[in-house]
Length: 442
Image 1: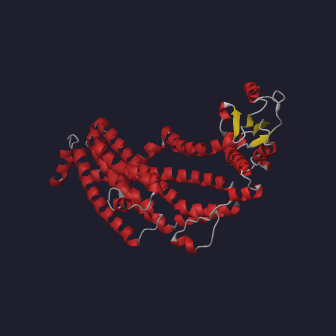
Image 2: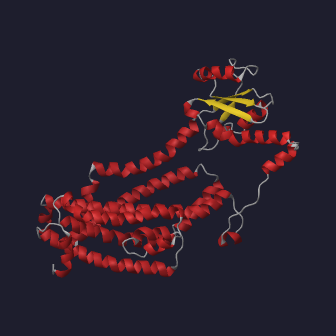
Image 3: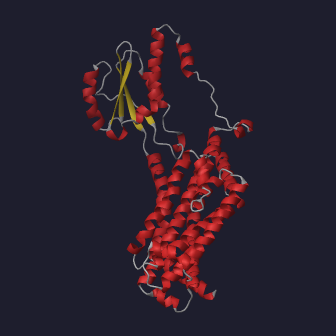
């Protein structure tokens, strides 16, 4: 046991003492945080876009259009963290006049925009039956105004056509604003008290998003740790370090020590990332209303209950042992990474199947095929974390754990034999060598 712990300590320190480890450790959280908060900060710091209205329709549309723009004015005290600068209605520049022709006015607009006197100009015309709005903007803000007031401008055309047919404006307004009451109901929500849209959306989609995220992290962790073990064994064999270790420890002690050492590296990474995630989450919750932040915290607490966390760890440990020892065994046969490609290709195809499945599960988590695939032991560690947030029956959890455990024991035993054979002999890696392990007493 002492030798196993010494090898694990050596494996752990070999990674954590390098500058590259710490750089890579903090790079992903920094990129993740920056990808969320930098766009938000840029959007929040964006100044309001100034918009002028040139009404050449003869229908006195300018007050209505300016009113639509005012609905998107910057909020007091800066508004929400996700809010952009908004829109601000400004007087018409002196170069433009409401008594000129559309052609003459639009000939001057490019120069007005280039001079920065206004961000956008809305030109309104009327051919007698249809209103037309030409929104002039610089390239960087081409669709901002259109996206903000599109349906309001369509409403002006609606009221115009209604008036042409003798329909009272008030009645036309009620007809345009009238909506049917449409609810989407599940057996659970039908008996639950009515909630706001945010709460309902979090209840419906929050567990699914978290499930996909957890499955993806599990896949990445198992894959990256397995590749670490593969590379470590190949490097030590090519540099003859493995031969030195074999002189003082058994192959079993070396293999267990390496697996334990890389597991400690993963725990270090997980602890750091968890701390960053917690800090970012606390920072992000500060921009939510208190009731919504509390609801999200309660939802996360329910999803990450002690029982679920224990099951997630069980699936992760099973997958880590299966693939980690298998990859370490491959490395024991190889002098270089090129030698491992014969077996790594099919193995990568197997590992990519659950990753592809996760993309479909994001939109359709209840597919029968997903449930069937989660029973396949090699896919179980990656797909069951996704299903856990959907509360599968207890017998499915017990069954998948049992099957994964049986296959894990078989793969660990085969991997141990393979590692010993590869470490003690100079045989090259091949499918024949791996399949022949079942017939050898090694």
